[in-house]
Image (cartoon, rainbow, N blue to C red):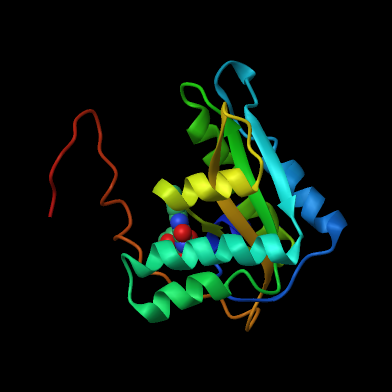
Length: 181
Ligand SMILES: Cc1cc2nc3c(=O)[nH]c(=O)nc-3n(C[C@H](O)[C@H](O)[C@H](O)COP(=O)(O)O)c2cc1C
């Protein structure tokens, strides 16, 4: 798939019908590892999580966390997204700017997945749930979890989920920030 097509086609996918083969998964993770990083630090680590019990426990943390801020139906769908997909923890070594690098990995992974006819959702954890999941994953003290990434064949593929976009170019300025109608 051509790069701009992948950029335009990429959507966050929250329901999967099939996990990728290991070879495809590794291609997607390899794309993640080609991200930018300050001083070429490459501070990322990727953990493939394929232990069903561990996936269940992580998904329960996502559920519990989302219950605090979203209606039940959304919390449930965030938990259920962990079915029929590959589950990868994208982690980074603590350090200035390193968190951003991990998210650049995620963007590369999203585009690579799109090119493979797949999709991803970053399934983000924070506060106590993030700390608990970091423990479950055995992260050393000097590492953090950026996000879980769920990768798979979209339920209902190839129908692409719609997303509202801000009007084109409204976010573009020249020389100075301007407020425009
Ligand atoms: C930092 C960050 C965290 C996100 N966390 C989640 C998440 O926990 N669950 C989820 O369903 N989507 C998550 N997303 C995806 C966004 O909801 C999505 O990108 C946005 O709705 C726009 O849709 P699109 O990706 O299809 O263009 C996250 C995206 C970013 C950049």
